[in-house]
Image (cartoon, rainbow, N blue to C red):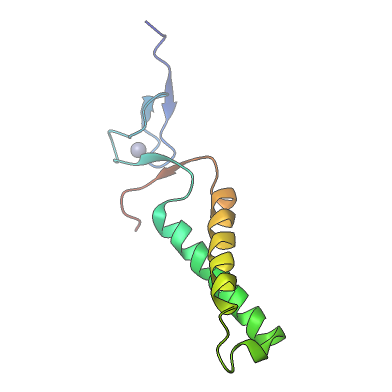
Length: 99
Ligand SMILES: [Zn+2]
């Protein structure tokens, strides 16, 4: 039997087991990495950023619409998604609903 060690829940500060991934008191959940909403948001930010930059630097790609914009958009999405992986790497405790 491993020793039962307790730590405090970062959300409600009630004692919980170190290995627990769900707080029994406030239902906060231990989460690794970005949640889907954050990945999506960062990907969309990357997309908006790259579209804005492209429009600024190479306006000729938009009139008429060039097919080059499509791989650029995909690159923006991918860059934003990867950024989210780094930005939210590590363990976090998420409250079920924020107030
Ligand atoms: Zn808690």
